[in-house]
Image 1: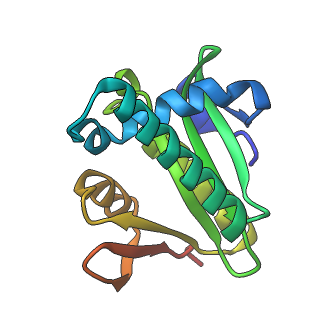
Image 2 (image 1 turned 180 degrees about the horizontal axis):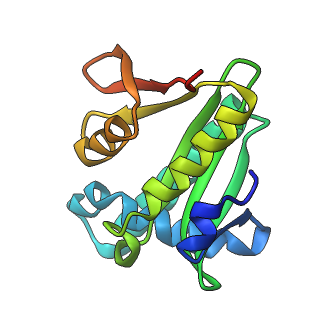
Length: 165
């Protein structure tokens, strides 16, 4: 993904993920899944379940989207989020977007998504994502950026944004 003016203006950098980002990505996943903290059990057991779920997500993304690109979002040199996208022939798919708790609610997700939309506009390609039913906050953000619901089931919705002109 090409760096956009919006990202630079907010002091954000989106860089390719590296092997050394593993601990950050695991910690980010844990903070993005508070539902896993509600599991009744010893803390060590909960940590094992979180690690397993993280591994399932990573493996599933790799199997279902082998050409996906993984990025780290940094603010002034500090990792604050992650973005995974799949640049397919017919669409750009946002597979994963998450931020650490201290970076949420500051507009960084909007800025990153606008960067994805700008890249999509340049190649005249829609952007698609799936939002889980238990994440109405994310759904609201995508709708505010012009995404529309194209498919719906009880667990999730598929949202798509189409470039203008």
